[in-house]
Picture 1: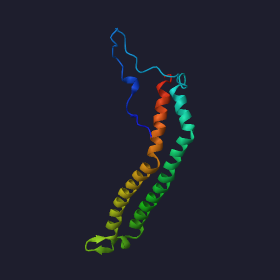
Picture 2: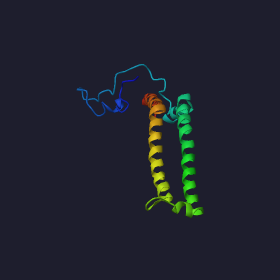
Picture 3: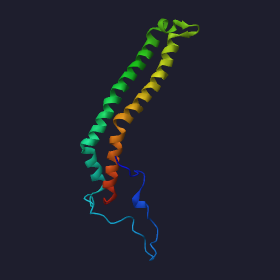
Picture 4: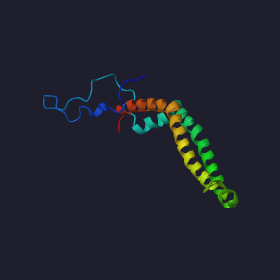
Amino acid sequence: MRLDDPWYDALASGWGELDGTGSFAPTGPPGPPDPWRGHSVADIYLEVQRSGAFQEVRRRYRRFVIPASIAFLLWYLVYVVAAITAPGLMARPVAGAVNVAMVAGLGQFLTTFLLTGAYARHARLRRDRAALELRWETQEMTRGAGR
């Protein structure tokens, strides 16, 4: 587990500060040469896009979003088609002035909230950590890249 802060920009930490001799302070300690120095940022992002880790994050995303979107759109279409083709069914009272159409319409809102919660849970459990690690790696590679 990494403990460094992904939001901290080491390149900007010493920017514009004088070092006491009248020249600008170095932005960080000298380290080993960066293997990505000289590569453009676009090359780095294309390499990350081709990586197995990125493809796995995208695969996990698609595995949830596509079936959930299809299911929700089908549920919505059933609601609309039923309202158009079966007005007698939709007008059938359930409790007092509440009819089937009102219950189904409120069900659309409930489904939206449940789907949002399911998406957030899926992202948290199956994608967020991998995506954040990929982001850290990408930031480290782009720090020394030529712009």
